[in-house]
Amino acid sequence: MKYITIKDIAAQLNISKSTVSRALAGDNNVSAETRDKVMALANELGYKRNELAANLRHNQSRTIGIIVPEMLTPFFLYVIISIQKVLNENGFKVIITQSHEDIQAESYNLQLMDDYRVDGIIMSICHKEQNVKEYIRLEKKGIPIVFFDRVPPDMYASKVIVNDYLKSFFMVERLIRSGRKRIVHLAGPDRIPNTAERKRAYKDALAKFKIPYDPELVIDGENERSEGERVIRIFLKKNIPFDAIFCFGETLAIGALNYLQSEGIKIPEDVAICGFSGTYLGTIVTPQLTAVQQPFEEMGRVSAELMIERLNNPDAPCQTITLDAEMVIRQST
Image (cartoon, rainbow, N blue to C red):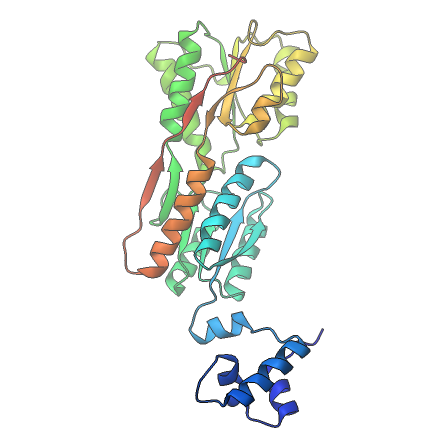
C-alpha cells in the first residue's frame, strides 16, 4: 500500500514541499487560494499526516510499550486497560506485547520496543534476574521503565506493587484462626519475585501460631488450573492430610477446588481454599473464592502516571509505590 505524502501533493500542484507543509499547517503566509487547493487535493488523495515521523523530528514517538507475562488471565488485561486509558488521555499511543512467561520472548519484546523508538516501557517481568542487564541498558539509553506487580527486586527503578508479604500473612493467619492447622501452600514458580514473599509470609504465619513448617505441604509450580489439579491429585493419592490451601494465584485455586469437588470433598467444610489476584474468575466458581484482591485499575493508573512523570522530568528519582490490596472473604473459606 502506497501512502500519499507531501511530495505527491507538491508534484501535482507544481509547488514546493515546504509550501504544501505550511498550507496544511494553516500558515497565513501561504495565500488562501493555495491553501484551499492543497487541502482539496489532500482530501481527494486521502493524505494523512505521518504522526510518527513528525514526533521523531522532535526526538519522541509519543508511544509507550507495555510488556506483560501473559494475557490469558484477567489480571494483566485489567491493568493494561487502565494503563491504556490514562496514556491515551494524555496523547500517547501504546504497543502491547506478551512474553508468554519466557525470558527469550521478553528479551525480544524489549528489543522490539527499542527498535520502534518507544518513549518508555511499562512492564511486569517473567523472571526476577534474567533480563535485568537489558532493563539497565534501556534505562541508560534514555528509555525509562516502570515495573508493576512483578518487579526486579534488586534493581533501582520505578515500581508499583502491593505488599505481597503482608496480605499473604493476613490470609494464612485468618485460615489458622478459623481452626485450620494443615495448610497446603501451592506456590508460584521460583523465577517470579512475588513467589518468595508469599512463601515467606506463609512460613511466618505458621511460626506465629507455633505450627511446625512441613515442606511436604509446599509445592512450587506454574500458576495454571491444570497445575492445581495435578498437585492436589498427588496429595490425595499419597493420603497426605490437609484442611486448607493457600494458593499463589486464583487459577491454581480453581484447579484445586474443581478436583477436590470431583472427589467428593466439600469446600469449605473439609478443605478451605483461598488465593491471590481476586478477578471475576473467583466469582464464577461454586463456592466463590476468598482472595487477596489486587487494585487492578489503580495499579494501571499509577503506573501510567509514574511513566508520564518520568518522561516530563527524566532526572527525578525513581519511586516505589505500594498500593493497598483488599482481602475479600467468600464462601470457599
